[in-house]
Each structure stands twice: as structure tokens, then as C-alpha cells.
Amino acid sequence: MKLLGIGSRISHAKYGKGVVTNVTSQHYWVTFIENGLETLELDEDFDVIEAAEDDVDTISFYEVEKSLRNILKKWSDASEVVTIADKWKGGKLIFEAGDPNMQGKVMDIDTFFHKITMVRDRLRVMEQKINSSKNLDEQEKIDLQQYITRSYGSLTSFNILFKLKSQQFRGQSSK
Image 1 (cartoon, one colour):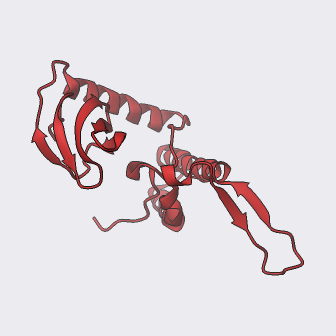
Image 2 (cartoon, rainbow, N blue to C red; image 1 turned 60 degrees about the vertical axis):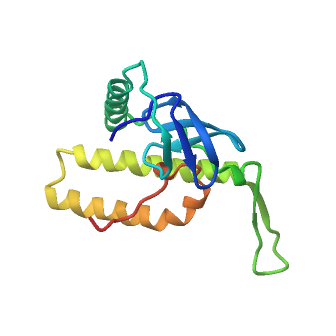
Image 3 (cartoon, rainbow, N blue to C red; image 1 turned 180 degrees about the vertical axis):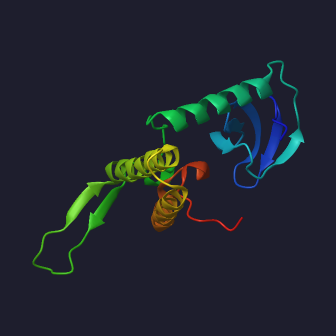
């Protein structure tokens, strides 16, 4: 994949025309004429109007950052910063009991989102610990891995809360 340099001009179906103002290991920061600053995933679908060559060796930085991120994910239980989709920011989750005599509950959606994100992060840590375990045989690892994959699949209903598709839950895919 060839990365666009800062200053590249693009056209996006949803946001219109814009200019790449920053490139990270996973995203382009694009300032759109009509919609302001948005972050787009590197593989998101858009048309390149004019590609700019960047003076900085973005590819090398990209590869180093990606490798470091993978190492940290593999060997630590540190979690990444996960943002909630803009339309849900400041929202509320309302639980209504089926019994009209019972009191409902209202929860900030940001609190709920944080709890969902923590479940995801803990599943990832459990997956890493299973894969690196010396006390489990290969079949036990496979069985436990399948449970985790099914758990991810069960949690895909909450993907509407995530701003970035790359941070959503993914169940078993057909590869």
C-alpha cells in the first residue's frame, strides 16, 4: 500500500473534497472544505485528485509505529485510545423494565461504551495469554480461541458505537 503524503488532495463520497494534513500509522487526517477535519482509515474508499510526495519518510515511520504497536499489544495489557462515534457522544442509554411497577435505569452512553471497550480489551489480553501459554496443549488453545472468537461475534451488535471501523469487534470471518 502506498501512503499519500501531506498535501494530497482527495474526494470523499460523504465529506467532499479535502486535503491530507497528517498521516499516522492507521489514519489520514483530512481537512474537508465543507466538513472540517475528519480522520479516515488508510484503506478507506476515496478518490485521489492529486497525490503529494511527502518529504518525511512516512513509510518507514508507519512500519516502525505499526511494529511497536503490535509488540506492545502482544506483550502488555495496555489498551489503545478508543473513540465513540460522534452521534453517540453525550448520549444516554435508557433501560425500561417490562414491569411498569419497576424503576428503569438511565446510564451515560460514554460509561456504557467504556465498559464495552474494557470487555474487548480483556478478551484480547485473554487471547494473548492463551496463545503464549505453555500449560495448554494445541487443541485446548484452539478450543479456547474459538470461544473468544464467538464472544467477539456476540459483541458485534455494539459496533455502531465505535467511531473507527478498525476498533470494532470482529467475529469469525470467512478467509
